[in-house]
Image (cartoon, rainbow, N blue to C red; front, top):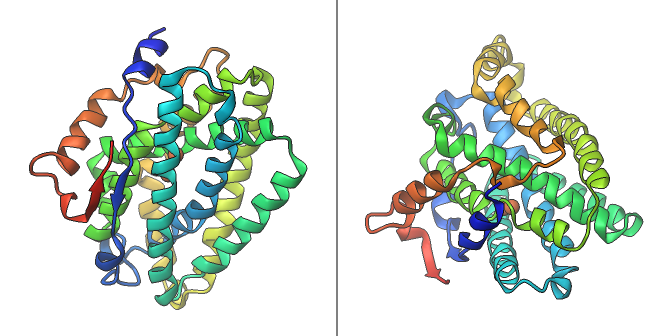
Length: 290
Ligand SMILES: [Fe+2]
Ligand SMILES: [Fe+2]
């Protein structure tokens, strides 16, 4: 296994970004062809990111002082910086979505309260296991976004796609950090795998419920044929493919490590496309820290 070699090369830079202004022009049904379900799906994901990512940061920060490997320590600092920035920018997107009529702010506070209860009841190592598992979700979705043009096209609106592309790149850059911290502090295989099994179920059920509520509050849902047309498109998309589900389940494998899937070439390609000399997101960059 090439885990060590890969993790010593991993760069996790914190980029200070500002998408706020560009997100002001996002229309109500921003997804490709004004698609109903896809717009609500992206909005629902965005709604859980800020408080979810705050939770990831707290879970990892709890163990910061126990990490002795200076390389992993450096990656943890990068992870915290990246997740804090994602939360900030998705909150700005959620504000815009709320203006457009999405229940994103209610979902934000629901997520915040739910996670606060979890943190009161569960031990820190269980929260770290949840973070490592959810980071596998974000890494899997990030790889799909970065590697599949059809999926990138589904975002429809350029500004929404830009926000998710930046987020996807950084999720790929730091995909193994929470996992490596979990291993470094002696987290068990049993807890790791069972946490994922529970979360995989919980995430799908929770997200489906959230999208359903969001759709019910949208007048367009009640237009004859609108929902059916949209569902036909979503069902055929790579978002509901067997491969994606298998990739999520790979986490249950006994000797799994996030670096087993080599995404280095993909990360290098998108760093160049977004932040290279001619990077398409350089104008959204406030400062580029190491
Ligand atoms: Fe993130
Ligand atoms: Fe992340």
